[in-house]
Image 1 (spheres, rainbow, N blue to C red):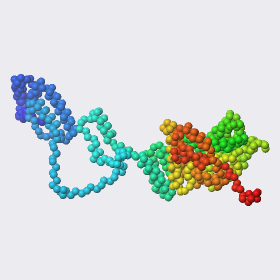
Image 2 (spheres, rainbow, N blue to C red):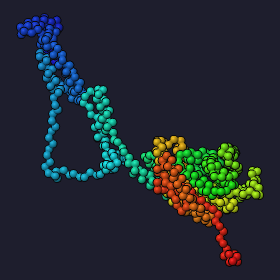
Image 3 (cartoon, rainbow, N blue to C red):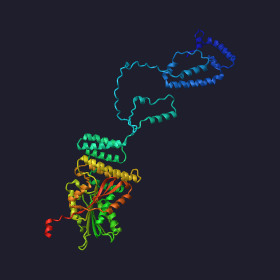
Image 4 (tube, rainbow, N blue to C red):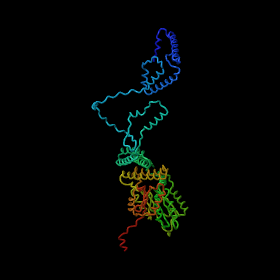
Length: 595
């Protein structure tokens, strides 16, 4: 910025020649200002600015506004401000400094010039317009809600325009910007029902690919199943996880010793532990034990010496209730002998004898004559009739005048394992028939996991175990527990091992070969047994038992052809049946000869 008084410096006299002239100008300016009736600031007057002392505060305030306006303008349009300051504009001796500052403020705060008016189109044919090609669909559509049908995808230009700020940042504006930015983020809501349908379809498609030996497609589908399962909650996510693991084991063929789905001796103790937690978390095993005990108790009515052969002794949880029921029988308790059969333990411990010792203590406390013997057998097919009828081996044989023993054979979730070995079930049923029991109680899963193609077996297992997991979730919710606790968690592992065996294993390793009640009826009939109807008393008491169980509203007890089933809502899950050795058919020739 150039001022006019600087031209006096361009002479030969230099500063010393100019100084007297400035002194005289100073005195004239001061005298003139005094004559106008106001005192003028002497320092500014010496530089050529005429500013009254009384106006200094107002001028200072306007200069501060000018500084703020220049800073704000620089924040919005730095290039324009710099070009304005770099221009050759010359303000010659602005004697009224206040008015000059006002002018600059008005220039800085002036609105932007209007945009030029675009030319009007003369005709539709003025431009050769062509339709734009359709934009490709986004890789991941942003669905703002399950009920909305539109999809929104922000463009790069929109993302660039998200932040617009024309004022200096402050604490309040920063908070508001953060809030608005958070509100601007897209919200992705996944329709869980649609994802669940896709998950089921992926499971079935993977099973079909496995059956067709299309391992490449099965590999891609099993990975998709794992991702889809994460969008689900509750029982569906857990069931899908176990089936995905089973499919992966079948596809990739890992063979860890003692792993999930294997029937090695190393897993026996673990299976027993899971069996106990399954007993505690849901009513299935309680129902099985109660209905079988009720049928056995009715068959032992009036007998003084009774003998029970248990094909799956485990921890002996079924028999304390029967001992107590026998102790309360009118006329006194009978002599009770129990034969328990179980697999060998990995540490060669005698777990069966430990169970028998605990039962003997209970029997002594309630004054029941009790004898016990345990058999270790890798398979029920290894048993022989003489092993089960040897009364003198434990020193408990009766005399000739004593009443013969009445025998009952009990099997809870054991006979289906024999179907993995051809002829094993027929041999065991022959051994049972040779013992001549008064009653045989059988409890099995009400499902068909032993016939048809792999895909059919997979579909049946998916429906069955989905209902089983739903029942566990329903029982936990009715009990007021969010996660069900360790009992439910380990019960899920118990069922998960069955899923893995049904899906991942084949041949002799696939031992979970469940069949329906109608199929067992045919097998028992061919083996020489006839059904024994379970009385209405057992049905009523089983219904009362479920009423006391948490979550019992979802469970249903039904009577079907003399058998009892327990299910979740409308799906039967386990079935209890009772049998006896069929009477030999009368020979027509012998009958005519007798007449």
